[in-house]
Length: 384
Image (cartoon, rainbow, N blue to C red; front, top):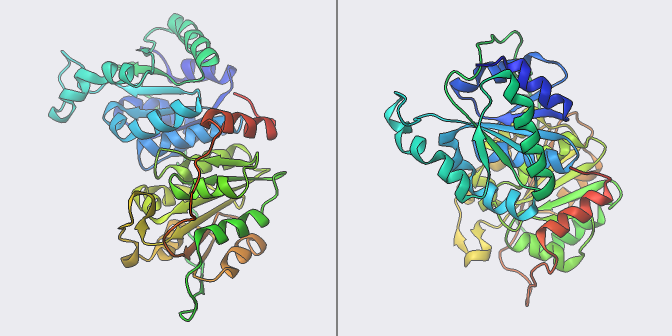
């Protein structure tokens, strides 16, 4: 058994200052130590997949990060592990608790995951080892992780057994109060107008964003492909997988790089899939984060099957989650106001109704995902 301080301070020496995750009782001393330290930051995500995507965004912004989760949460993290961190080659540390460890009495829901935790990490090509249980093991373990991450640019996991960390109490308030009941939803609807098409909207967004001080993150599917077809700029990131994680990925980057404007271009299907991250954005993001949700009420790239967005007031949800500026409508002026009028302290949300469909002969990006990421990182002078 070790003190949380011993591992965390050793990790801090290597540049790890941000932690994301979902709590587990095994992690309590660890999380409490991070929260108690004013120089460290803990992002309380709503699920493990979003925590992992936020860590990934932080890392590409130049801030080394650690994601923590119970092993049951590996299921929530499979998509961003396999189609975000793997294809973009993003290295970070994972601490995964070993609930249901064979031979250790635990709750029945942990039995199967306890048996397959290490196998699941191996299947996803994440090397793992047991979290250090003695002080002398900490530095060598971190050195092994460092060596792998530096060479392979992929995650490395420590599997934490029960009782690895001595208890530590929480001394300070965990979440800042960001009550924003005064936030008004500005409506920009004109029922007489025909809905805008995605391509026209993306061109308008590009016109508002300079490559010098902004990053555009486009959700998977037609949105990223159309953005690429219009103008493949060095400040673009095309999320070719990890559906729903564009906003959590963008949050991590926005936190790491407050000098940049981070614009996430989401879809209704993707936004609904991981809507819990709206709350995380409302709590942690600043006014360098703009979240644009293009809502055509269908899963466009898979054949036009309906989403439930027609019956959901996404603007009200964004307001309730703490966004400082919320716009909803079907007029192009919505995009103009998002970029010109966002003077608030927190993030901005724009819900724009558009039509379904895409351009003819829509291309796919001909630049590999990791190459897209590396050129963006060079552009903003960032490194792992």
